[in-house]
Image (tube, rainbow, N blue to C red; front, top):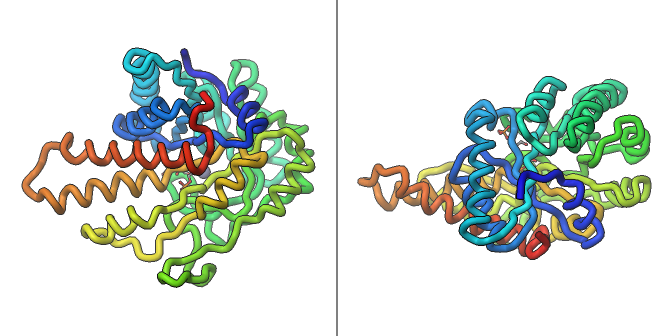
Length: 327
Ligand code: G3H
Ligand code: 13P
Ligand code: ZN
């Protein structure tokens, strides 16, 4: 099995009422943790690379590591692991072209910070090049809040997707999927304490996602795959692990998993998760360092980090995305 596009994955996910997990990758341990989980759960997979990840690890390293994961799946598990390799938050035509030329099977062109007309123009340019090369394209309408390397949108500048724009955008650009903003956001601090209520344990409870907007978009684009960014749940067990081992992440809060499960049953075919894996890795390493202050072999602390990434991805595939057994 070689690298595949998400076309077939999305068709089956839409019809089957589940979503494909799109996990961000930056290094070997992250790729191994995610792919081992997908192999064991027989789940289709999207591995996505941000421009920051590409700068950190370099394109060739990430491609070769992903190819190695495919070979490993065949050799050790006798399993054809379908992997779509996707550019996350591409912001220029040149970046998308470079990823397409370099073997990615899917790119996102994130023109959401441009005007509606300029977003259409840029997205159309990427779609023409991508489709000529057998590559699929994700566009975006609406702006998610959050701060990451490539994404820096204040809560005040965030805006929900306007359902009255989606048909024209999809028709004029020819995109294969559309990311929409319905209240998710990037990073580990998705909501301020003021935006939330607190449950009996004092844990922040965020405002619900705008399923009404998702429903309206779905009515206007029947059968069309929708994408949710900023969909980490920020597991409190890892926040606790970080805070108890020298870290400081007060009031980190994510999207409740039940709401993501509900989204996965609908037109949402791709759910993006990065922060939860970062938390699993950081928590594991912090804990290891505190428990073994005399150890200094990176394999010793990267091993539990990789194992915890694998566990959390398995949990997402089975209990949140519903895509286990669908490969
Ligand atoms: O949405 C952004 C992803 O979490 C990637 O983050 O740009 O820091 O690699 P990054
Ligand atoms: P999280 O920060 O919620 O994991 O979102 C990741 C994402 O949307 C990548 O594009
Ligand atoms: Zn994103």
